[in-house]
Image 1 (cartoon, rainbow, N blue to C red):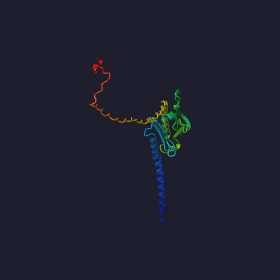
Image 2 (image 1 turned 180 degrees about the vertical axis):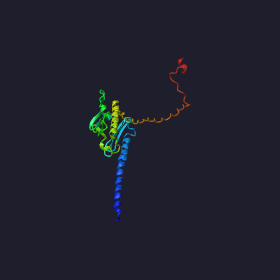
Image 3 (image 1 turned 90 degrees about the horizontal axis):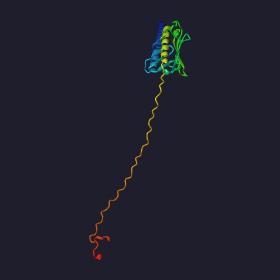
Image 4 (image 1 turned 120 degrees about the vertical axis):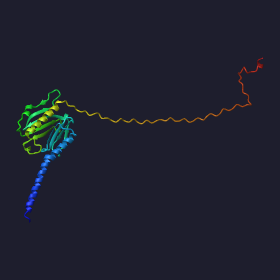
Amino acid sequence: MPTFLPALIILSAAALAVLIILYRIYESRVEQPKKLEDEVKEALGGAKPDVESIEPVRKAACAISYMADKIVIVREFGKLPTRTYTIADLYGLEVFVDGRIFARVVRAGSAKPLDTGSYKAIDDIAPTVNDVTVRLIFDDPIHPDFQLILWRPDDALTARAEGPRAAMARARKWFHHVEAILRRPVHVKVPPPAIHAPVPEPAKVAVVAPIPAALPEPGPAPAPSASAPPKKGEGDVLNAPLIPYI
């Protein structure tokens, strides 16, 4: 057995391990975020999102496009289908910092003011936090909410790791954007009435009048006989002879 064979096997195994590590890094930092971005873009129909968060570590994403009237929710990408809501389905938003609610905004009735949380809590929070989560609330009894984790301490070496300060800035962006949406009146789109095809009228059968049979043409009148004198009427006094009256 050659003496260099064990060293060659060890070097091959080390090279294979390095390739696997590089592939996983590429998949988590490049491929997975690109797939999530493409999924969100396709769900929005090509519209530009007003606010967007891509979390490839948790295979989740969320985006809002007010002009497209769409809210895209991606959770457990590849396992669960992507859900799409309208702006009218959005009921509120909550920001959690270290497990506590630091800001809340919900849609109130038409006669009530907007129920908002504390601005000071979300603007003056210390940057040394361990958990930043945004929770969207929808008018959906089956899927009433969606929690998107923006920061955790174990995200420091993962893709799209922003840090606690950047996570709080993104949470503020989500909060103020949703608040601006909820301040506007809800326009529920009423589908147009269905257009039914006109019922065709029954075909009218043309009644053709029967053509009368041609009558035979009358023949010529018989000519009077030349030998027989015309018969005079008995009451013709003017042509009567004068002898009987003398």
